[in-house]
Amino acid sequence: MGSNGEGSDLRTHDFIGEPHEYNPRRLFSKTGTDYWGQVDFDQLRKDRLAKARKRMDEEGLGSLLLFAGENIRYVTGSYQGNWKYNIFIRYAVLPKGGDPVLFETVGSDLIRSEMDMPWLDDVRPAMTWRWAEGAEGMMAEKMAEGVREVLEENGVEDEPVGVDAYDQTAYHALQDAGLELENAWSAISKARVRKTPDELELLKMSAAYGDGAMWRAMNEWTKPGIPEKEITAKVNEYLYRNGFDHVYDIIVASGGRTNPYGRWATDKVLRQGDLVIADINAVGPGGYFIDYVRTWKVDADPTEEEIALYEQCYDQLYSAIEQLQPGNTTKDVAEQFREYDDDEYGSVSIQQAAHSIGISLYEGMWVSRAYSLDYPAELEEGMYFAIETFAGHEDLDQTVRLEENVMITDEGPVITTLCEHPDYFTDHFDHRDYDFLQRQPGHGPA
Image (cartoon, rainbow, N blue to C red; front, side, top):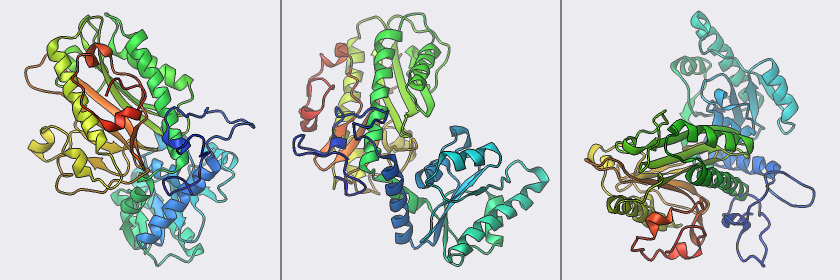
């Protein structure tokens, strides 16, 4: 068993004094060799499938029917590009007591799945009903018949079927096929929110490349006169050259676009004295996300006001990270965020928040003052969060945003994003005593 109670035990040795996966400096290569034990992808797939089975049983489901791309990947280990993730053209069935069945788009896609994934014994043609005009109902009926056939083969056709997402056409087709439909999100979310040791290793790997891109954006690619999209383009190039599955979004906002915050990149040019907020969101070479933010200044010293804004974000961020401890709750984290629009509107801004990440940008749970104060959820060892703060206020020309990636270990939070904060901000701080930062590399004085 792994150190977080799930999955395999990756190269933990008495000499290093802690699980390998809990130290962001102990990083594997993305390339396998015959002389260095690294991420075990076969074990990863087995562990994820075992977790999905366990949660399915606990929820009283006889099967899972999955349409969301990240859930299909979690259970089957199948990936054929981000474009397929959420358009309802492929799906997977996991029957109780049986092996997963992947329904793949026909033609080369199906053949590639059979060739590329020897661990899958059963790949069948997917019936795609979306955009079929007058044939939608007929095609959805064929899809439902194929699903029911798998359930009958495994003797679970009369048990509840947990479905993660579907449209009205699919819903009616599955009902007409005589299936008892339930919500699968509780089961699949509980399976995914705690990471196995192999998953943590892959998240660390993505964080390392994210650090490399962020450092270059801050120190090499930022110059007065370049457009925001040039930084976006260079980050894309760096990540794809290093084997990333998919660059989800590289948000760059500068100057006046930082307040109110524009969460996309434009062709606005950077000016001397601009603040730049960069948010890297991408799927690493092992299939796991990096999502974090730094703010820096373009070729000028920060003003006292800007230093104060940075310190406000920094203190909220690390105060909240300090609460990411096993046994604490999401309420303990949310209490560290300043009041914001989440409080005013009772909804989530994703600017003063935390969210689980893994093989998707959002999985497991979100933390927000909109509901976490009144509906706390327990934090557990093996969870992994992106946590972010924002210093947006009225009447500011520009402002600051920060975000880190953090795993929860048996000894507390460990930050995996190690790109340092600019010292022209942090050297002016009156640093609080964050105990957990004493063992964190790359984050300036505690």
